[in-house]
Amino acid sequence: MANKLVIGNWKMNGSRKSNAELLSKILAPLERLESVDVAICPPFIYLEQLANLVVQSSIQLGAQDLNQAEHGAFTGEISGAMLRDFGCHYVLVGHSERRSLYGEGNDLVATKFQAALRSGLTPVLCVGETLEQRRKGVTLEVVNKQLQAVLDLLGVNQLGGGVLAYEPVWAIGTGETATPEQAQEVHRHIRQYIAENNSEVARTTRILYGGSVKGDNAAELFAQPDIDGGLVGGASLDVHSFLSICKAGQPRHT
Ligand code: PEP
Image 1 (tube, rainbow, N blue to C red):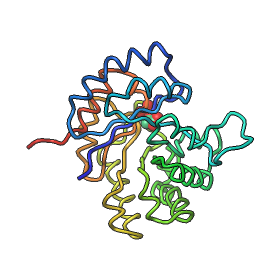
Image 2: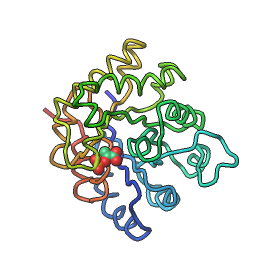
Image 3: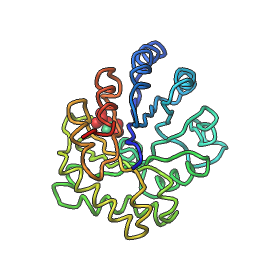
Image 4: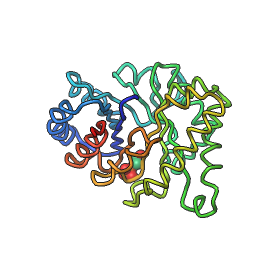
């Protein structure tokens, strides 16, 4: 069994001072945890600062987005190669805020996934339904389409080169968390959907849950058989909450 993976997505938050303070409080306690993988995705501009702060630790670095091109006249954009240059291991693709606020559709997200792999990064493909879609009962269809775009472009083996994150849009930043049963239902479905293409890839691909994960709900979510960790927004900015979530990712001793 792979370690659980907890990724903190800082979104557009932080400052050089607050980043240094946060890291000074979480680094030592995180190093004492066993068998849980932890990564942080700060805003691009703080990647170098974070790379220096985590250099002696096991925390890995991720970015929140990338451009699908390798280089060129794309003002304001950042390529996968640049992220590698700054020591990134992961990159989020298709976060719901990118999809809803910046119009990123499934095809573009698939090309970003491809660009990440091409650069030697591990893409974290975010999928999930809106509240309206859940109420209409089309959650699984929406998630299928989001996965299928990557499968169509790259095939199942390359999909397995990434991490998946099921993030119901109605649970992101709202304080409303999917119940462990609701999350597990979709996670199981995602694994089965991949298994229709390749059962080994389905078994080994980590599927994270994201959407108001907190210190007091992480353990129950992570105990579900198809939940392999968490993608954590707001709570990753709080020392106590983030440490509790990472702690919940440790294997349970019976
Ligand atoms: C996210 O940004 O991916 C996220 C899940 O945010 P939050 O934990 O704040 O809901």
